[in-house]
Amino acid sequence: MKLGESGIALIIVLWVMALLIVIVLSFSVMARTEVFSTMTFQEQMINKYLAEAGMQRAIMEIFYRNANKSKQITFAEEEVYRTDGTFYLGEMSNGYYKFSISDESGKININALNDVSGIILNNILVNAGVEKETADTIVDSILDWKDADDLTRLCGAENDYYISLANPYKAKNANFDNLEELLLVKGITSEILYGNEEKPGLINFTTIYSNTDKININVATPEVLKAIPSISDDNIRQIINYRQADNTKKNGTDIQAALAGDYAKISQYISTGDSNVYSIEVLGYQEKENNKKGYLLKSIIILEGNDRYRILFYQSPANIRKS
Image (cartoon, rainbow, N blue to C red; front, side):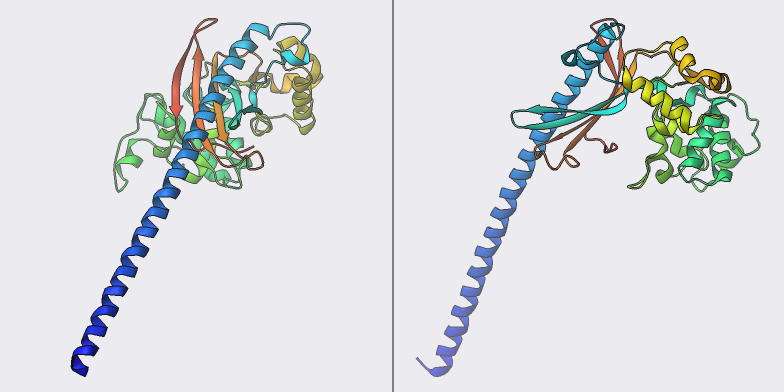
């Protein structure tokens, strides 16, 4: 074989070897990717079922609470779980879950919003870092969005504003069907509604499911309590300490006695009666030390009798707050 032919043959052999190496590496990467994808899928499915187990546990605890909340004496093993968003932990053979239950009566009902409860919503926004002018716009615009007339409040918006947008639409002039509908209202951005890593969003403190325009202070979060006009930090501590000391149902007389003379200042904004609608947030995870990541579930249920419930909202997976 001539020298030139030998060189060509060597080059061909080298190219074939390089091609074979690329093919082998490609198969190796594909196999590795498939293995990791399978492991990730398996982990996600385990976390999902852990979260679903936590969801059923939370529903069971709600029924147990309703059956036992009036008991005068409760032993440690018979603890009645709070419905103020407190997280509780659970363990199974292959992992863990944590869940919280929130009575919707502790949130601001935007469908029942009026000039009185609008003050609380305004304070929620300002306390979360929203400019006062923007907060005024949001509250008035929510009221304009759901009322039946075309009269525009001082800082609100009606059809003339929404029709002037790049993608025009009309004010609904009816109640909200879901909280995400708030994104259509003037002044509300995704960050205001959903929050960020540093602070929760408006969606955590509002509802469309409670049957009152008042705030149930037995279950409201500290952020909502702080937004009630004329309420002091001492009042908030009294309320939280009082309901943590005995998490069964409190009546109006009890809480009035606990707040003493300050009760009259806030009485027009508050209630003390539980509702039958609850939101549940659950996180399923496998590593005990890493309880910030996992599969997230959220649902809202309504009780229909002593042993029946109906799901009003279900999100899987969901973006929820971390405790």
